[in-house]
Image (cartoon, rainbow, N blue to C red; front, side, top):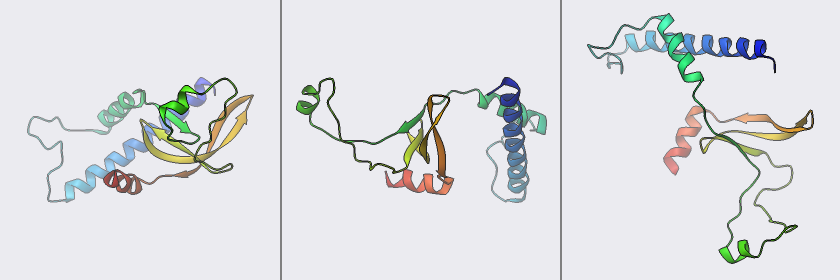
Length: 138
């Protein structure tokens, strides 16, 4: 992906976040409960500050993991592994793979090959409410 495309995509994401934060600010202004930034020493937030704050967050690195499957085995099995050994996973062939960010499931997808490199095509995005439900179970 070219730098120009990445910059355009980053600007688009920043604009989307800025719009969502502005909508949230308007909605919370109408609520009777105080917002988190209603502290007397907190500076007034403008659209320019929101975009700048979002730009800072966009550079924070996170660990994105695509999980093919899992298996729980005793240590004696691990010690018997050698080159050419096969480890059977709990996932079935053709089943969607889990996409995790910092260990939390955010999506599922299927393997693709692009220019001799593996990638993943996202087929299902986990909604924020579903993420919260899964966190409360665990």
